[in-house]
Amino acid sequence: MEVKKFIVMLGLLFVSHSLPLPMSTAHAQQEVPAYAKWGQLAIKEVKSKYPTAQIVDYLHEGKEVHGLSTIEKFKLWLKQPDKEFGVHVKISYLTATQEVEKIEFQESSS
Figure (cartoon, rainbow, N blue to C red):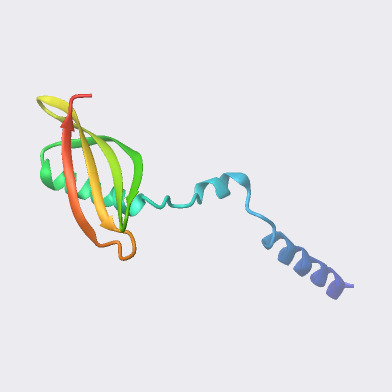
């Protein structure tokens, strides 16, 4: 009789480990967006260009495809002791190889 209980318990253990994850855990494992790599580069370049500023917000504004190139567009909101301002960042890269062609910055007050 003890062997049957062991087999039943072993079966329950196996089944319980093969059930789907609870919703709260599943939401924590969201997919990384395709633009994340470029967003990290935008943040790195803005930190380099504005070393005393604190980045307080980040927005992916979309992408444009032009022939063989793709442009990823971001807006970062920066705070310095004397001012707050936005920086639009455009990262142009070759779509096939993902080789960066150029990075452009444009400051804005809104």
